Length: 599
Ligand SMILES: Nc1ncnc2c1ncn2[C@@H]1O[C@H](COP(=O)(O)OP(=O)(O)OP(=O)(O)O)[C@@H](O)[C@H]1O
Ligand SMILES: [Mg+2]
Image 1: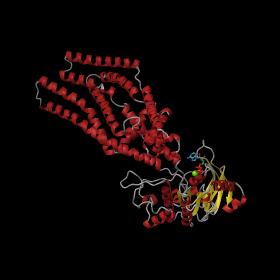
Image 2: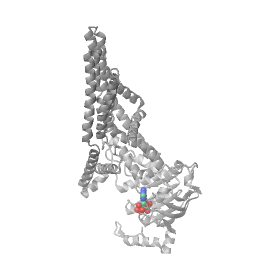
Image 3: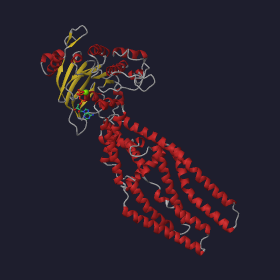
Image 4: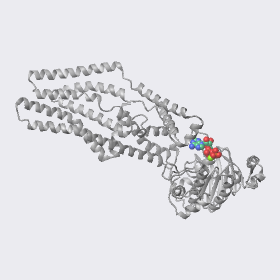
């Protein structure tokens, strides 16, 4: 445990250098100087006392004392400034590392693993400050603590000139107190499931309270007290855990105090006796007594709570980089996917589950899709439709079986190359807090292409291209759910214009009004007629418009054919269709009944 702890601290001290080498060098240099100066101050005072006693010239000793004193006074504020600077740049560096750790892996499994998500909460604490002060503040405490350690050791070194045993006795004495204080200040066993759990829940409750999307339900369902309670209980729990872990132990405290007392009295007695005997001069006695007292800073300085509190998240950040890369990186192939799929997409006996401990989602899924056709995937909630889309984007790999494009396994393609061939409207598409233009073409496209995409998605009249689609920005606006869905559709259609060959539409019109849905889907199909289009939808009015329909159940294809074929077959598809059609009677503006047949 001890080696682990010190390793964490070493990692932290090294991270400062990695984050900002020049500033860290300055910070360490100032730390050393500030640590050494009190010993020099003691020596210079001794030199002055000796000069006074012997009636020598005082100019030299006074300059010595003055110089050391000025240095002593000015270095502290300088060091504080360097600390603030180093703290902020280190926090920025750590944030960068976290962004890289989370976004660089080609897959996404690392963001779904509970242990890594816990690590992420611990890691972010250098910034969040739930467990301790944020980095730009704690670094100053760390600096002071380390300076005190150097002061103590440097002062003890001066005492070697008096007697070899004096620094050893003093350091041992104060060392016992240091150990005791450290035990009481450092939360050694913070990395437990209980602590992590409390941290994660506190963070979750905090997010619910401050993020706008949860605001509606918190108010409507009266959940605000629950959120506040959850946050404060977890915080209290963390404080209690910390308190319990760091209580002073009374017995050893008395022991440590006795050791300190005996050590100091012993050394002071020896100095006094020798001064009295005339074996050492008055100046030397002053130096030794001062440094003896300064050695006490060893007890209070150093590796206390601040260093421990800052070192834990830093170690977590640096650990996450490799852990997330390992969990989330998919093997990369070497083949170019340019022009694919030109012939077909094939699922061949695919078995897939998200993790070893979660149920099988796809259980021998086999399906041939012809390039250029449009195919709909139909199935109940949780049947695995979105999973199929994610597998096609190669966000995960199947445990067995294969998915191929034109006979080439997706794993053999260069991931980026394959992904540039695919575009998707995901069921949980993202609403970017950016302009309409950037929402439609995040990587840029001509105005003409953007306008065309917006037109096809029925979103041409929503906002000016450069208007920010989020409140909280100058001139920003927000859209309704259905309007956002049109924007997401336009984003995908823009990619199709740019040449994407495989289009995945996962409930692309679920939030659109009925008339808008039928009309827009027709336009979308038209715009994607040169691409292979896979549609997931629960709305049979859209499903029936595609070339072929595939019904998924229990992780397998149970029916496949055109709308007419499947209706004629009278199986699962027909049952589902009839159920929906029976419930679906709506009147249009003229009062005429609209059904699936008329739509
Ligand atoms: N990231 C995940 N980790 C673990 N299990 C998951 C994950 N995503 C989905 N699942 C599970 O996989 C199964 C299939 O989910 P999927 O999202 O593919 O269903 P779906 O057919 O798209 O459903 P819906 O019609 O509701 O959108 C579900 O049982 C779901 O609980
Ligand atoms: Mg889904």
